Length: 404
Image (cartoon, rainbow, N blue to C red):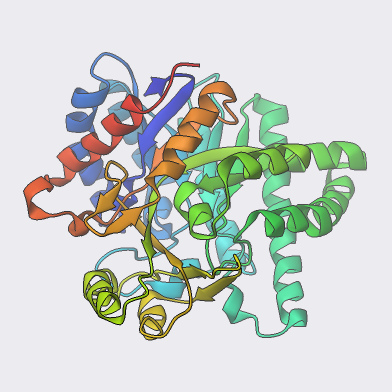
Protein backbone atom coordinates (compact mmCIF):
# COMPACT_ATOMS: atom_id res chain seq x y z
CA UNK A 1 0.00 0.00 0.00
CA UNK A 2 1.12 3.52 -0.70
CA UNK A 3 1.23 5.69 2.42
CA UNK A 4 2.88 9.10 2.82
CA UNK A 5 5.06 8.65 -0.24
CA UNK A 6 6.16 5.11 0.56
CA UNK A 7 5.12 1.61 -0.48
CA UNK A 8 4.54 -0.11 2.88
CA UNK A 9 4.32 -3.87 3.30
CA UNK A 10 5.53 -6.73 5.46
CA UNK A 11 8.08 -9.38 4.57
CA UNK A 12 6.46 -12.74 3.79
CA UNK A 13 9.47 -14.61 5.20
CA UNK A 14 7.24 -14.94 8.29
CA UNK A 15 5.34 -17.68 6.45
CA UNK A 16 6.98 -21.13 6.40
CA UNK A 17 7.39 -23.04 3.15
CA UNK A 18 10.20 -23.42 0.63
CA UNK A 19 8.25 -24.54 -2.46
CA UNK A 20 6.33 -22.15 -4.68
CA UNK A 21 3.16 -24.14 -4.00
CA UNK A 22 3.53 -23.55 -0.24
CA UNK A 23 4.51 -19.91 -0.75
CA UNK A 24 1.55 -19.19 -3.00
CA UNK A 25 -0.83 -20.96 -0.63
CA UNK A 26 0.33 -18.70 2.22
CA UNK A 27 -0.20 -15.62 0.08
CA UNK A 28 -3.71 -16.76 -0.77
CA UNK A 29 -4.48 -17.42 2.88
CA UNK A 30 -3.08 -14.25 4.45
CA UNK A 31 -2.79 -11.41 1.95
CA UNK A 32 -6.54 -10.83 1.25
CA UNK A 33 -7.30 -10.82 4.99
CA UNK A 34 -4.48 -8.40 5.77
CA UNK A 35 -5.33 -6.14 2.83
CA UNK A 36 -8.95 -5.93 3.98
CA UNK A 37 -7.78 -4.51 7.31
CA UNK A 38 -5.09 -2.06 6.19
CA UNK A 39 -5.68 -1.26 2.52
CA UNK A 40 -9.24 -2.20 1.65
CA UNK A 41 -9.75 0.48 -1.00
CA UNK A 42 -6.24 0.73 -2.44
CA UNK A 43 -3.75 -1.70 -3.99
CA UNK A 44 -1.65 -3.66 -1.50
CA UNK A 45 2.08 -4.18 -2.13
CA UNK A 46 3.71 -7.49 -1.26
CA UNK A 47 7.24 -7.96 0.08
CA UNK A 48 7.83 -11.39 -1.38
CA UNK A 49 10.24 -13.95 -0.02
CA UNK A 50 10.88 -16.67 -2.60
CA UNK A 51 13.45 -19.33 -1.78
CA UNK A 52 15.78 -20.74 -4.42
CA UNK A 53 13.47 -23.73 -4.78
CA UNK A 54 10.35 -21.58 -5.10
CA UNK A 55 12.01 -19.20 -7.56
CA UNK A 56 12.77 -22.06 -9.95
CA UNK A 57 9.06 -22.87 -10.07
CA UNK A 58 7.81 -19.27 -10.15
CA UNK A 59 10.10 -18.49 -13.08
CA UNK A 60 8.14 -20.93 -15.25
CA UNK A 61 5.83 -19.06 -17.60
CA UNK A 62 2.64 -20.80 -16.54
CA UNK A 63 3.25 -20.16 -12.82
CA UNK A 64 4.27 -16.56 -13.40
CA UNK A 65 1.16 -15.87 -15.47
CA UNK A 66 -1.07 -17.51 -12.85
CA UNK A 67 0.50 -15.39 -10.12
CA UNK A 68 0.14 -12.18 -12.15
CA UNK A 69 -3.54 -12.98 -12.69
CA UNK A 70 -3.98 -13.59 -8.94
CA UNK A 71 -2.29 -10.27 -8.12
CA UNK A 72 -4.59 -8.41 -10.52
CA UNK A 73 -7.70 -10.15 -9.21
CA UNK A 74 -6.80 -9.30 -5.62
CA UNK A 75 -5.65 -5.71 -6.26
CA UNK A 76 -2.08 -6.49 -5.17
CA UNK A 77 1.37 -5.90 -6.59
CA UNK A 78 4.96 -6.98 -5.89
CA UNK A 79 7.61 -4.27 -5.60
CA UNK A 80 10.28 -5.87 -3.41
CA UNK A 81 11.78 -9.29 -2.70
CA UNK A 82 13.69 -10.55 0.31
CA UNK A 83 16.49 -12.40 -1.48
CA UNK A 84 18.63 -12.89 1.63
CA UNK A 85 17.59 -16.40 2.79
CA UNK A 86 18.38 -18.75 -0.10
CA UNK A 87 17.14 -21.99 1.45
CA UNK A 88 15.31 -23.17 4.55
CA UNK A 89 14.34 -20.43 7.02
CA UNK A 90 11.80 -22.17 9.25
CA UNK A 91 11.58 -25.25 11.46
CA UNK A 92 15.32 -25.95 11.28
CA UNK A 93 18.58 -24.61 12.68
CA UNK A 94 19.62 -21.68 10.48
CA UNK A 95 22.29 -19.74 12.42
CA UNK A 96 25.16 -18.61 10.15
CA UNK A 97 23.90 -20.83 7.32
CA UNK A 98 21.44 -18.06 6.44
CA UNK A 99 24.36 -16.58 4.45
CA UNK A 100 24.85 -19.74 2.38
CA UNK A 101 25.48 -19.68 -0.48
CA UNK A 102 27.21 -16.32 -0.13
CA UNK A 103 28.23 -13.80 -2.77
CA UNK A 104 31.49 -15.62 -3.42
CA UNK A 105 29.48 -18.32 -5.19
CA UNK A 106 27.86 -18.60 -8.58
CA UNK A 107 24.77 -20.04 -6.86
CA UNK A 108 24.03 -16.77 -5.04
CA UNK A 109 24.50 -14.77 -8.23
CA UNK A 110 22.25 -17.11 -10.26
CA UNK A 111 19.50 -17.08 -7.64
CA UNK A 112 19.52 -13.28 -7.49
CA UNK A 113 19.67 -13.00 -11.29
CA UNK A 114 16.55 -15.20 -11.49
CA UNK A 115 14.71 -13.14 -8.87
CA UNK A 116 15.32 -10.02 -10.94
CA UNK A 117 13.84 -11.70 -14.02
CA UNK A 118 10.74 -12.48 -11.96
CA UNK A 119 10.57 -9.00 -10.43
CA UNK A 120 10.94 -7.35 -13.83
CA UNK A 121 7.95 -9.37 -15.05
CA UNK A 122 5.81 -8.54 -12.00
CA UNK A 123 6.70 -4.90 -11.32
CA UNK A 124 3.95 -2.41 -12.25
CA UNK A 125 4.81 0.36 -14.66
CA UNK A 126 6.19 3.51 -13.09
CA UNK A 127 7.60 1.81 -9.97
CA UNK A 128 11.14 0.93 -9.03
CA UNK A 129 11.75 -2.55 -7.69
CA UNK A 130 14.33 -3.90 -5.25
CA UNK A 131 15.73 -7.13 -3.88
CA UNK A 132 17.47 -7.22 -0.49
CA UNK A 133 20.41 -9.57 -0.09
CA UNK A 134 23.19 -10.83 2.16
CA UNK A 135 26.02 -8.49 3.27
CA UNK A 136 28.40 -10.46 1.01
CA UNK A 137 29.15 -13.26 3.49
CA UNK A 138 29.53 -14.25 7.13
CA UNK A 139 32.80 -12.66 8.24
CA UNK A 140 34.01 -15.51 10.48
CA UNK A 141 34.17 -17.95 7.57
CA UNK A 142 37.21 -16.00 6.31
CA UNK A 143 40.03 -16.45 8.80
CA UNK A 144 42.75 -14.18 7.43
CA UNK A 145 42.83 -10.75 5.81
CA UNK A 146 43.89 -12.39 2.55
CA UNK A 147 40.90 -14.72 2.65
CA UNK A 148 38.57 -11.86 3.52
CA UNK A 149 39.91 -9.69 0.68
CA UNK A 150 39.54 -12.58 -1.75
CA UNK A 151 35.91 -13.08 -0.65
CA UNK A 152 35.16 -9.37 -1.07
CA UNK A 153 36.81 -9.28 -4.51
CA UNK A 154 34.85 -12.27 -5.82
CA UNK A 155 31.63 -10.95 -4.30
CA UNK A 156 32.21 -7.55 -5.94
CA UNK A 157 32.54 -9.12 -9.39
CA UNK A 158 29.28 -11.03 -8.89
CA UNK A 159 27.55 -7.82 -7.78
CA UNK A 160 28.95 -6.05 -10.84
CA UNK A 161 27.37 -8.73 -13.05
CA UNK A 162 24.04 -7.97 -11.41
CA UNK A 163 24.61 -4.24 -11.97
CA UNK A 164 25.31 -4.97 -15.64
CA UNK A 165 22.01 -6.83 -15.93
CA UNK A 166 20.04 -4.07 -14.23
CA UNK A 167 21.71 -1.40 -16.36
CA UNK A 168 20.59 -3.21 -19.51
CA UNK A 169 17.05 -3.78 -18.19
CA UNK A 170 16.77 -0.07 -17.43
CA UNK A 171 18.18 0.94 -20.80
CA UNK A 172 15.99 -1.44 -22.80
CA UNK A 173 12.72 -1.33 -20.86
CA UNK A 174 12.88 1.75 -18.66
CA UNK A 175 12.32 -0.40 -15.53
CA UNK A 176 14.50 0.70 -12.62
CA UNK A 177 15.61 -2.23 -10.46
CA UNK A 178 18.14 -2.26 -7.63
CA UNK A 179 19.90 -4.80 -5.45
CA UNK A 180 19.79 -3.75 -1.79
CA UNK A 181 22.70 -5.05 0.32
CA UNK A 182 21.59 -5.63 3.92
CA UNK A 183 24.33 -5.03 6.51
CA UNK A 184 23.88 -7.06 9.66
CA UNK A 185 25.92 -8.05 12.73
CA UNK A 186 28.80 -10.38 11.80
CA UNK A 187 28.26 -9.96 8.08
CA UNK A 188 31.27 -8.77 6.11
CA UNK A 189 29.33 -5.50 6.04
CA UNK A 190 27.76 -4.71 9.40
CA UNK A 191 28.05 -0.96 9.98
CA UNK A 192 28.21 2.39 8.21
CA UNK A 193 32.00 2.63 7.95
CA UNK A 194 32.28 -0.83 6.44
CA UNK A 195 29.67 0.08 3.83
CA UNK A 196 31.52 3.30 2.98
CA UNK A 197 34.84 1.44 2.72
CA UNK A 198 33.30 -1.24 0.51
CA UNK A 199 31.91 1.24 -1.98
CA UNK A 200 35.08 3.33 -2.04
CA UNK A 201 37.67 0.54 -2.11
CA UNK A 202 35.88 -2.29 -3.88
CA UNK A 203 32.49 -1.77 -5.46
CA UNK A 204 33.21 1.44 -7.37
CA UNK A 205 36.80 0.74 -8.52
CA UNK A 206 36.48 -3.00 -9.19
CA UNK A 207 32.84 -2.96 -10.26
CA UNK A 208 33.33 0.20 -12.28
CA UNK A 209 36.23 -1.33 -14.21
CA UNK A 210 34.09 -4.40 -14.95
CA UNK A 211 31.22 -2.29 -16.31
CA UNK A 212 33.42 -0.08 -18.46
CA UNK A 213 34.90 -3.17 -20.10
CA UNK A 214 31.61 -5.06 -20.50
CA UNK A 215 29.36 -2.17 -21.54
CA UNK A 216 31.82 0.17 -23.23
CA UNK A 217 30.77 3.09 -21.08
CA UNK A 218 32.89 5.72 -19.31
CA UNK A 219 34.06 5.09 -15.76
CA UNK A 220 31.91 8.02 -14.61
CA UNK A 221 28.81 6.40 -16.10
CA UNK A 222 29.84 3.05 -14.64
CA UNK A 223 30.12 4.56 -11.15
CA UNK A 224 26.74 6.24 -11.53
CA UNK A 225 25.17 2.97 -12.69
CA UNK A 226 26.65 1.01 -9.80
CA UNK A 227 25.29 3.49 -7.26
CA UNK A 228 21.91 3.47 -9.00
CA UNK A 229 21.54 -0.30 -9.10
CA UNK A 230 23.48 -1.44 -6.01
CA UNK A 231 21.94 0.15 -2.93
CA UNK A 232 21.60 -0.50 0.77
CA UNK A 233 18.78 -2.19 2.63
CA UNK A 234 18.64 -0.28 5.90
CA UNK A 235 17.39 -2.72 8.54
CA UNK A 236 16.60 -0.61 11.62
CA UNK A 237 17.23 -3.51 14.01
CA UNK A 238 20.68 -4.28 12.58
CA UNK A 239 22.01 -0.74 12.81
CA UNK A 240 20.48 -0.28 16.27
CA UNK A 241 22.37 -3.36 17.49
CA UNK A 242 25.67 -1.66 16.61
CA UNK A 243 24.58 1.58 18.34
CA UNK A 244 24.45 3.76 15.22
CA UNK A 245 22.09 6.73 14.95
CA UNK A 246 19.78 6.81 11.91
CA UNK A 247 20.32 10.48 11.03
CA UNK A 248 24.12 10.11 11.08
CA UNK A 249 23.97 6.99 8.89
CA UNK A 250 21.67 8.62 6.36
CA UNK A 251 23.85 11.70 6.12
CA UNK A 252 27.03 9.64 5.69
CA UNK A 253 25.50 7.58 2.90
CA UNK A 254 24.17 10.66 1.13
CA UNK A 255 27.58 12.36 1.29
CA UNK A 256 29.10 9.29 -0.37
CA UNK A 257 26.38 9.08 -3.03
CA UNK A 258 25.12 5.76 -1.67
CA UNK A 259 21.38 5.22 -2.05
CA UNK A 260 19.02 3.36 0.25
CA UNK A 261 16.80 1.01 -1.70
CA UNK A 262 14.65 -0.32 1.13
CA UNK A 263 14.09 0.34 4.83
CA UNK A 264 13.21 -2.74 6.85
CA UNK A 265 11.24 -1.70 9.90
CA UNK A 266 12.36 -3.94 12.75
CA UNK A 267 13.25 -3.74 16.42
CA UNK A 268 16.08 -5.28 18.46
CA UNK A 269 16.23 -6.01 22.18
CA UNK A 270 18.21 -3.86 24.58
CA UNK A 271 18.93 -4.25 28.29
CA UNK A 272 20.73 -2.18 30.87
CA UNK A 273 23.10 -4.38 32.88
CA UNK A 274 22.43 -3.98 36.64
CA UNK A 275 25.34 -3.67 39.08
CA UNK A 276 23.75 -5.96 41.66
CA UNK A 277 24.59 -9.66 41.13
CA UNK A 278 21.14 -10.87 42.22
CA UNK A 279 19.53 -8.59 39.65
CA UNK A 280 21.86 -10.02 37.03
CA UNK A 281 20.60 -13.50 37.87
CA UNK A 282 17.06 -12.24 37.38
CA UNK A 283 18.08 -10.71 34.03
CA UNK A 284 19.64 -14.01 32.98
CA UNK A 285 16.33 -15.73 33.70
CA UNK A 286 14.44 -13.12 31.66
CA UNK A 287 16.80 -13.46 28.70
CA UNK A 288 16.86 -17.28 28.66
CA UNK A 289 13.69 -17.66 26.53
CA UNK A 290 15.32 -15.52 23.85
CA UNK A 291 18.38 -17.80 23.59
CA UNK A 292 16.69 -20.10 21.08
CA UNK A 293 18.48 -22.43 18.69
CA UNK A 294 17.13 -21.46 15.25
CA UNK A 295 18.73 -18.11 14.42
CA UNK A 296 21.88 -16.25 15.41
CA UNK A 297 21.14 -13.56 17.97
CA UNK A 298 24.34 -11.54 18.06
CA UNK A 299 24.95 -9.32 21.07
CA UNK A 300 26.87 -6.04 21.08
CA UNK A 301 27.81 -4.81 24.55
CA UNK A 302 28.60 -1.16 25.31
CA UNK A 303 31.10 -0.35 28.06
CA UNK A 304 31.23 2.82 30.16
CA UNK A 305 33.88 4.29 27.84
CA UNK A 306 31.54 3.67 24.85
CA UNK A 307 33.76 0.88 23.51
CA UNK A 308 31.85 -2.07 22.03
CA UNK A 309 32.32 -5.82 22.50
CA UNK A 310 30.61 -8.29 20.18
CA UNK A 311 29.37 -11.83 20.82
CA UNK A 312 28.44 -14.25 18.04
CA UNK A 313 25.25 -15.38 19.78
CA UNK A 314 23.18 -14.70 22.89
CA UNK A 315 24.14 -17.89 24.79
CA UNK A 316 27.82 -16.91 24.44
CA UNK A 317 27.10 -13.45 25.87
CA UNK A 318 25.05 -14.87 28.73
CA UNK A 319 28.06 -16.87 29.92
CA UNK A 320 29.71 -13.52 30.75
CA UNK A 321 26.69 -11.84 32.34
CA UNK A 322 27.63 -12.47 35.98
CA UNK A 323 30.96 -10.64 35.72
CA UNK A 324 30.58 -8.32 32.74
CA UNK A 325 31.64 -4.69 33.06
CA UNK A 326 29.32 -3.68 30.21
CA UNK A 327 26.50 -1.23 30.87
CA UNK A 328 24.15 -2.18 28.03
CA UNK A 329 23.50 -5.03 25.62
CA UNK A 330 21.82 -4.78 22.22
CA UNK A 331 20.56 -8.13 20.91
CA UNK A 332 19.82 -9.03 17.28
CA UNK A 333 16.28 -10.32 17.71
CA UNK A 334 13.47 -9.10 15.46
CA UNK A 335 10.85 -8.47 18.11
CA UNK A 336 7.42 -6.98 17.29
CA UNK A 337 7.68 -3.27 16.56
CA UNK A 338 4.52 -2.10 18.34
CA UNK A 339 5.93 -2.71 21.84
CA UNK A 340 8.57 -0.53 23.49
CA UNK A 341 9.42 -3.09 26.16
CA UNK A 342 8.79 -6.60 27.47
CA UNK A 343 8.68 -5.86 31.16
CA UNK A 344 12.27 -5.25 32.25
CA UNK A 345 13.61 -5.88 28.74
CA UNK A 346 13.31 -2.99 26.32
CA UNK A 347 13.29 -2.80 22.53
CA UNK A 348 14.92 -0.33 20.15
CA UNK A 349 11.50 0.89 19.02
CA UNK A 350 12.65 4.51 19.40
CA UNK A 351 15.05 3.99 16.49
CA UNK A 352 12.07 3.10 14.30
CA UNK A 353 10.23 6.23 15.40
CA UNK A 354 13.36 8.29 14.66
CA UNK A 355 13.56 6.76 11.17
CA UNK A 356 9.87 7.38 10.46
CA UNK A 357 10.21 10.99 11.60
CA UNK A 358 13.32 11.46 9.45
CA UNK A 359 11.81 10.06 6.26
CA UNK A 360 8.67 12.15 6.71
CA UNK A 361 10.89 15.14 5.88
CA UNK A 362 13.50 13.42 3.70
CA UNK A 363 12.02 10.29 2.05
CA UNK A 364 15.39 8.61 1.19
CA UNK A 365 13.62 5.76 -0.60
CA UNK A 366 10.04 4.65 -1.21
CA UNK A 367 10.19 1.02 -0.02
CA UNK A 368 9.24 0.20 3.59
CA UNK A 369 8.95 -3.38 4.80
CA UNK A 370 8.11 -4.58 8.30
CA UNK A 371 10.25 -7.59 9.16
CA UNK A 372 9.17 -9.28 12.38
CA UNK A 373 9.34 -13.03 12.83
CA UNK A 374 9.44 -13.60 16.62
CA UNK A 375 5.82 -13.44 17.71
CA UNK A 376 6.39 -16.15 20.31
CA UNK A 377 7.99 -13.63 22.70
CA UNK A 378 4.70 -11.81 23.23
CA UNK A 379 2.83 -12.34 26.48
CA UNK A 380 -0.17 -14.60 25.91
CA UNK A 381 -2.53 -11.82 26.99
CA UNK A 382 -1.65 -9.66 23.97
CA UNK A 383 -0.75 -12.32 21.40
CA UNK A 384 -2.89 -12.56 18.27
CA UNK A 385 -3.11 -14.99 15.40
CA UNK A 386 -0.45 -14.45 12.73
CA UNK A 387 -2.67 -12.43 10.41
CA UNK A 388 -3.81 -10.21 13.26
CA UNK A 389 -0.21 -9.74 14.40
CA UNK A 390 0.87 -8.58 10.95
CA UNK A 391 -2.05 -6.16 10.76
CA UNK A 392 -1.16 -4.72 14.18
CA UNK A 393 2.43 -4.13 13.06
CA UNK A 394 1.38 -2.34 9.87
CA UNK A 395 -1.21 -0.25 11.69
CA UNK A 396 1.40 0.79 14.27
CA UNK A 397 3.72 1.96 11.47
CA UNK A 398 0.92 3.91 9.80
CA UNK A 399 -0.05 5.54 13.09
CA UNK A 400 3.54 6.54 13.80
CA UNK A 401 4.25 7.89 10.32
CA UNK A 402 3.98 11.62 9.81
CA UNK A 403 2.69 13.27 6.68
CA UNK A 404 5.50 14.84 4.66
